[in-house]
Every structure is written in structure tokens, then in C-alpha cells.
Image 1 (cartoon, rainbow, N blue to C red):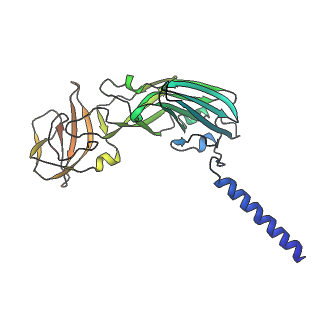
Image 2 (spheres, rainbow, N blue to C red; image 1 turned 90 degrees about the vertical axis):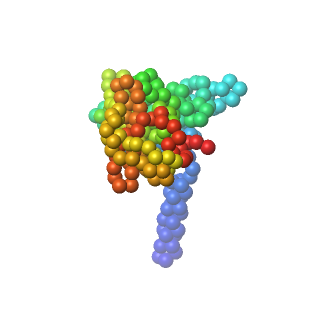
Image 3 (cartoon, rainbow, N blue to C red; image 1 turned 60 degrees about the horizontal axis):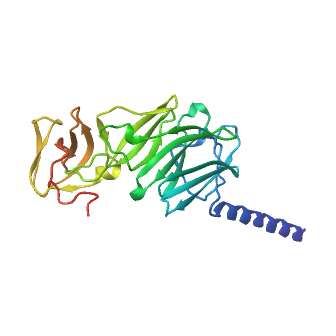
Amino acid sequence: MRTKLNYYRKAALFISVLVLSLLMKPGNSFAAEKSTGLDGVKTLNENTVYRYDLNGDGIAETIKYQVTENEEQHTATLKLYIDKKLCLTKKDDGLSFHMHLLDLNKNDNSLDLFIQTTMESDCIKNAFFAQYDGDKITHKIAFKADNMAKDFDIFRYSLEKTDGAGGFTLLLDTPVYSNAAGCYFCYASFQVKDNKIFMISTSTFTLGKYSKEYQYKAVKAFTVYSEAGTKKIAYKVTKGEKVTIDKLYIAKTGKVYFRVNNKMGRKGWIVSDQENLFAELPGWG
């Protein structure tokens, strides 16, 4: 009896170790999720196997992609495998591809792939959304962000979140360079409707977390105005004072302003193209 009990204990231990080793093995993911269970944006790494229910049939598919780079031709080729079947091959100018998984519209019972071609300095050349219908890749919707915002140069960005109703948010890297603020990140919202994408119209953009936390040290005194484009003074910044910037505003004239906040909680606006206000600008040097 004791021998048989020890045998079962050893067998159980062996199975536990085997399962644990499979779960920890690089390149394998066994956390299958249905389309309604995916929150936010999931970054998919190259040569890694993931399991997600892409088409809402209750069965998780395996997802894996590979990228082949040709430095001489300056091209990259993407091969996407779903359930070990080659479902998409795409060749593009650039250095590599990146892929993300999200649920753009929770009512369509399908997850969405967001695929990007990247260039030097992480610039994004092309991008598109796509779905898998259980047999093939469908609903390939091209996303050319730089064509949607006349005031922005959108070359570098990351996909941050979706509202599950066709809307998604990008974190843009310095869409308008500022002599005053230097480099920064700000959010912009987009909407997918009838297989077309458009940018949500707004004149004010919120900066990203780290950009809002960056402290600028004034090298000279300057004036901050209560409203963008007006001469009504909100407060004055003294030499050596540290301030933060949290919003960007684009006037109808195309002129750009940043909202500046001091440690007392006062807020106001400065013109984006002012030079030599701060000792060090993010992204310089």
C-alpha cells in the first residue's frame, strides 16, 4: 500500500513539474482568452506562441509571427501563422514589423491585430488593423496617421488603449516640435467606423505621464498668460523656477501653445516657438 502511495505521489509530482516547465518555456503561452476577455492592448513578440480566441467561436487559436530582414534591400518580410497555418505574408520597406492584439469592438465578437512596419529611429511607415475569421485574415484597414492630422507630423507612436466601441488612443512622440518644450508625448484619439479610420477632432491634447512630470528649469524670467493667444497675465515665472507642462493647444490659425503649471498650482499658456526659456529640454543632448 505504501509503495503504491509513493508511486502516485511521484507521478503527481512529475506531472506538476512537466506542466510548470511547459508554462515557463520561452515562446509558449497557454493563457487562452476569449475575445470578450482581452482588456487593453497586448504586445505580441516575434517567434512567440500565443493562444487567444480570435474569432469568438470559443476555441483559442495559436498565434505566431516571424520577421525576415533584408538589410541590402532595406526591406522586411512578415509571416503570420495561426494554428500553424501561414495566413499572412507581407513585405515592406523598413527594418522590421511589430504586432499588437486588442478588441476594437466588443460587439463584433472578434479580436483585432494591429500590425506596423517600422523604420529607423522607431518611425512607423505603414500600419493596419486586421481580423481572423477562422480561416483567413479579413478586414484589413490601413492606418495612415500622418494623413489624418494636418497640424501633426505623426511618425512615432504607440497604441495605448481602446474603448471597445471602435475608438482607440495613440501616444504620439512630438507631433509638433517645440522650441519651448523640446520633445514630449501626447495622446490623440481615433475612431474606426465602416472600415474607415478618422481622428477625433480636438484642439487640446493631454501630454503623457512622463512628459507631464518632467520639470523645466527657467533660465530667465518670462510671462505665462491665462488663455492661449491673449495678453492677460496668469503669472510670471522667475529665473531658476521649476515648472511642468501638461497640455498642448492648437489654435485655428495653426499656432501652437503649451500649458505651464508652477508649484503653487497656477496654470497658464506660452507660445510653442519661444526659445531659450529652459535650461534643458527633453530629447536634447
